[in-house]
Length: 320
Image 1 (cartoon, rainbow, N blue to C red):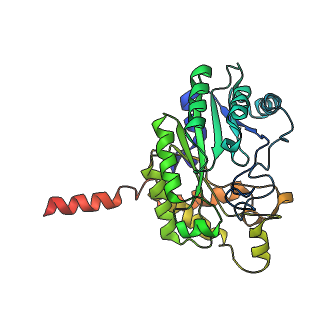
Image 2: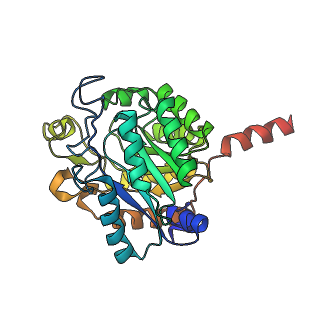
Image 3: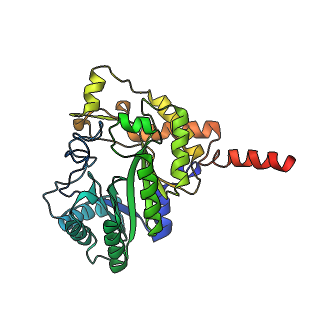
């Protein structure tokens, strides 16, 4: 079982809320300052037309209706008892504050089965106004708040290659302010970026751990249609690592990750219709099975190397 090797989100949810919990994707009409010219044009080189919301309903559908429709489907298919609306696409705190507050309030409603709210955004797009709104909704509705930040890598040079438009300092500062409000933090990372080596992967695990991220989402670099990354890939300007390298990097990342951090996702996915290549044209669950087999063979577990350096230094100090 995966819980033998790393902390699994579904287990954490069930322990906290006492039953099966599922996220409900929500899509609102919002863009990103990295796409519309405020910071840059075109966005991150891997970002597709749907801004990460490939499996969401259309943003023209009212928020409350999106939640109701997704809730009905997921409750029926997965027997979930509680739900967390997840504002997934683009940069959700780029919406005007009044509209943002209205949207998240509509998502939660007065439904006792809604136990939390998750909002995805950029590290440089979360000021105190939006944190105040989230805090107010949390108190008024009695729901837990998770803010999801796209980090991707601790290598600042790679961030520039990706056209992320934010710095490591932005991530660290925003993570600190999220935690100061008592909200949970989820950090997104890509473990097989062509410009990162394995030391960068370990450093990314260290950074996520240092800011006390509560959750982490990991995925491989997949290539969506109609992106700069797709053009670069077809022009031979970059090569993807084989899936075996992704597995090795997953193990490395998990071993350097604080064992208290919960892994929401170990490999992502995108619809074939939107992609040039995703996960080496291999199903996500086969990738996960490969990872578990590797960890079992190596006797590897999350956090194995997390305290390794400190223990080595402390042992040396005691000896002298």
